[in-house]
Image 1 (cartoon, helix red, strand yellow):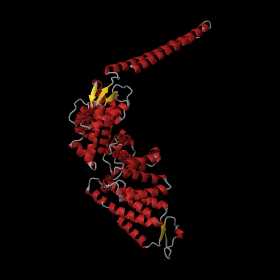
Image 2 (tube, rainbow, N blue to C red; image 1 turned 45 degrees about the vertical axis):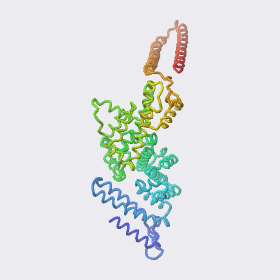
Image 3 (spheres, one colour; image 1 turned 90 degrees about the horizontal axis):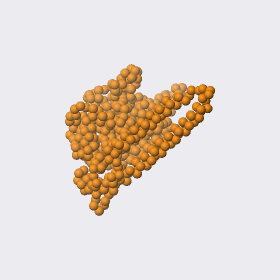
Image 4 (cartoon, rainbow, N blue to C red; image 1 turned 180 degrees about the horizontal axis):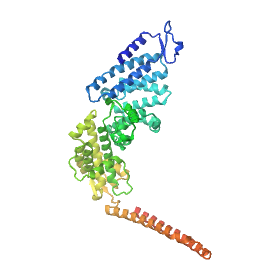
Length: 508
């Protein structure tokens, strides 16, 4: 009934363009009897309330019922009403009103995937063209930060959804939204979270694994992705909310058709973390100061190691954990079979548009990172390695193997050199063996333990010299001076010894 009433209202205002309608018209200056007619009111506000009620109705429906589908069919009519309102307001509305109606239209467009635009990115697509025109108008004319921020986030989301990675990334970086988003209202922060997630998924589909991990790490690190994306409330944190807060948060939840699949999101994050973290762990196995790139990934691995009995993987997480363990030994085929199989395809990969392309990209990344992990783990065993043999082992083109090893040598990750005539990698044997690395770690710990003990002894001995007595004062002062001088000399000697030890260690 509301849709019918709003449509009738638009019919009336379109049929009578001489009637001047606006919020700025005061009640005493209204004229409804003789032309020119002046009516106090705002058609835009009525349509905005209608759009909000439509969203509330979808929130109240069961997402898996036929009623939800029936109600969702009304969105087409809602979009038609917004188009008609835009046509009515553009010639006669204020700049603020035009920006508001543009944003309403953008918010109904940004999350919808258009296969035609994806397959033909060079063609002038209507949805992209309309989105760009409306966003540019808001950027230029809007005086408030909120509309500009929301329209920019919607445009980035729309670009990322259609795999326009560089345009979406550049727009996000130029906007500097990540510096100021914490000062925005909660719905805008939710939109920002959704946009970052979509950027991460886009980066993953394009093969930019590190960018995908960086975009998704903040959302996934706290285990609250469901709340941060406004796709539901966590039962574990129910006791932290008052009934009033819970009502407010439920009003912010997005309708089901706008949701991002959380299992897909977690799988992309864990696979990205695996491809970055496993080679890094292999390269810095004996480094005591090794930092964690992904805490969530390490937590999942630790939970798996605590299990007394490890059976075949069942859930998505277990598949990623099993793949990570296979990658640690350089077994890329086993790793790939754990990540890409019928169960994982049904749960994750087939949710992507053109899933075959994504699976091929994941397979190639697994091959490359398994090669790097193999070289980090077993380089100390070899005197030399044939590029041809490595290419056969990992089923990669020999040129790709050459480029990977060259990059590792340039970055000083692998102490080796390439012998071009024989196509071999010659190891330099400059790094300490496992036993030598453990011995160095032990010596560092013993040295720090000795230093701590000496400091404690000095503190205890220093208390003996604070007893003041008249006849002993001069002798005590002299003794303390000599003690201080000897202590400084001892510290200087130990510092020199440590420096000499560090120089010998570097030379070794």
